[in-house]
Length: 213
Image (cartoon, rainbow, N blue to C red; front, side, top):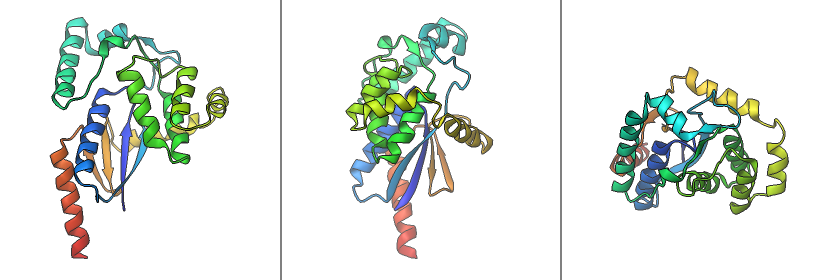
């Protein structure tokens, strides 16, 4: 198996689009060589702990309402093109994602990482839930088969906050500036939400390399 490390943030729409397109490729190549692991990268490392109003966040980030609408119209168009349903209107707050990343980390220890990543994306982009809220995160953990009571206790502590922040910082120091970023076999970085055809080409090249050795 070949490691595919994915740097992502669960409030990043391009990360959801990139995941969807990757999984389309993997479904078409059921004997693909990848084993996937998710890693933390915060789009907004300076976000207040309680998050902020989404409209204010977008207008501040993109320099006004009109530009924010333009950017997200393009994202919505791309999502629709690949059959991905996103309800941007349901999202009222932009959260701090440290706790969501902690949950993803703990889910990885339990072998349920992808289930939790899926649930976080669904909660935020389809249901408009605040994934910075401990109760919401505990409910997501429970839906993925984790012990919600244990997760609540962990989230109420400082467990693994340093871990998440150090990994995030390390990625930036290595030159990562945006997500999603995919690292193939610990060597090759593939930035952005890539089409399924690119991933199928990568898989084919990896097979050729394996057959040649």
